[in-house]
Length: 66
Image 1 (cartoon, one colour):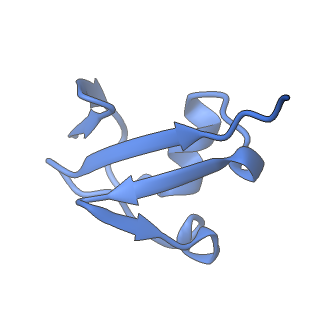
Image 2 (cartoon, one colour):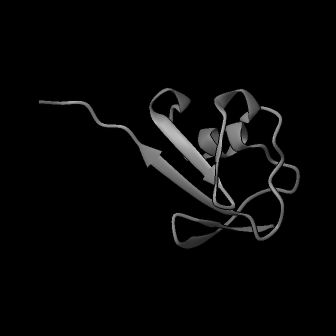
């Protein structure tokens, strides 16, 4: 299955969740926001929201500093 991730086409397994995608990318869910098809996805849905072919995902990392 193909999704559009931060502007690049990425292959992922059928039936993958947002949580599985983050693990596949080695990204901790603690300091990111995920936009799925132009909507911000609540973190409580990361484990249950299944990806579909053609989904558009933006992952934003929060960076601290001063």
